Length: 560
Image 1 (cartoon, rainbow, N blue to C red):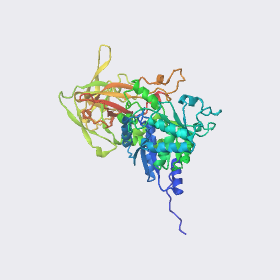
Image 2 (image 1 turned 90 degrees about the vertical axis):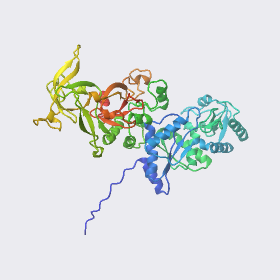
Image 3 (image 1 turned 30 degrees about the vertical axis):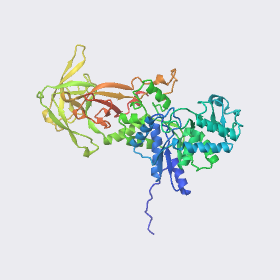
Image 4 (image 1 turned 30 degrees about the horizontal axis):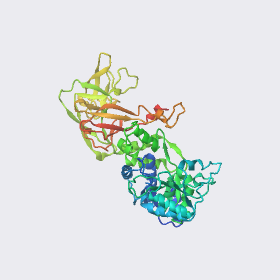
């Protein structure tokens, strides 16, 4: 009998959300509908990027759709500026929503459902202030106290709620609460607030409304209206899920279901919108898109690619428990992507002038340089070579240790894409600082070998001094000195003491001339230095470059 040589493909390992979706499909669910529901009260950050990748990615994998729905239920904090930035960020990441929706699209329906709950005896108007409500909610071990207005009749509640909508009462005078159980072990069930009065112009509905629904009341119903099958939230909403289900069941509407995954926490990174806003308002950073911020627009300005952010989201995966991810993983992902796509250029950020004494004055020779060794189709470029060049000061040592393969008195190195040079003389200023090197070159070494076949181990980068583009170069490090920005164990009064004073260091760099008009959004590898991109602060005659990431993870080693 012939042996069965057929092999089977290894089964794909699923995360728990994929398992949930596949189980629902196996039970007969014929469609997958997700949504990404940001509140337009700030800029999205890397944590939101993970959620975007999950919601849009799951919909794509299972042939479903993902809506973009703005949770615009607080007109005081929300603005079209944030709406526009959120849409821009999602599209930059490479995703497109099926439908663009807003919670405000459903204000009429949400109001009608609130009236229905009042008629069912499941909601009432309370005259207590929000502070009084907070104080009477009780504790985990003690039940709350019922409001003195809890026993109002249905007719009175309907009348008061209608008058709330008509604007008869000032902010904070009344709220609408669900009537559930003031002794419930889940504190969120202790007659949660459904509506509050806010006399403020809404960015979409203007002044039509002066009462606005709370998140716990609006969210599940919005999901139900859109017939969301898998409402995916971060783990802090786990305790909100029973209330999400309660409202849907009480109204008898489409049963959307909520599932939670662990939110993203990164070392040296703060994700709190409130504290990020404080950094912006107090001028600790240059704005929401400051490359030191964790916002998506900041990553874009810093030179990150959409592919690198998506790769990071896939790397960290979908977990059920909160954990802290090493910032180095995000930097690893952008290095991996840029190594494949970034064109190479030479730049000197700590210049030391070199005069090649046996090179003819005024002579300029174009040397051929590879644009990207990872991509043969990227081609070659011309780099000017002249009598005077800049090398990096770190590539010279007057008294080198053993096995030092860069430039030193009497030694030779190869200039990248060019000749062998030998240091013949060191020129110093009155204080004894090295200000210039006098070297000679081997005219027969330009094709990668020397005239007599000798080899050198050192290869350094350089730029032609008369052709160099002078630029402001910003070297970014983590915004915080401690892995946990909120760590005050060393006696600090607040997280602000952990801000890193060296999070941005500005230096003057000299770049090869092909970078003179480098387009914004294009990232390059400065050979032997790191990855850099032109900043939006660039002006005519004053190029500004941001360091996207170093070639190696040096920050983590320094801070161990």
